View: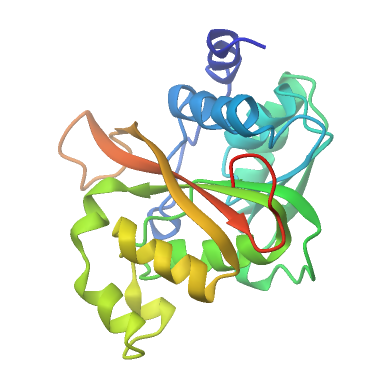
Length: 238
């Protein structure tokens, strides 16, 4: 499937009508979702014929993209039942077979590397510090091949908390949204079961006016697309 075709199909999906700010629910748009999964498949062969999990799936856009690109099996996990209902409708509309699971990512209870690839647009941690790192920690425990994750580019400069974490003065939860590229790489390699961690590219995340505190109709947020490889995998691109 070509990139434009993938983006067009994802553009037909329904999005949040009443998003929950406490869960940092922002729709992953078709532009960024299509490029994220297209890169995972065409550059690293991490999607087609693979078992793919979409962490914090929301409306199910990333999982749908994985299914459209030929994933063997796709699972979407989210804590919000209303989001899962919408994701299920989206999957049905595209005639995709996706298994949806309601669970807090931290309480998922999976043991071992039971999926090939995890894709996710985790909470940036603006409401709950460390939420993105919690997602990454679990993802690197259950994925055997790769984890693809989006993190705000602007948080690269927040290195003080990372340094304190690396010195043992703060926990992962205390680090919050600190994803300064050099330090998140060190954390991933040293503490989160990763054998490699790299920023593949910078993308533009279109944030629409969803909440009352949003003053602008739309804002473009720069995000980094990260690829993490769990220990034990020395496949393509490692």
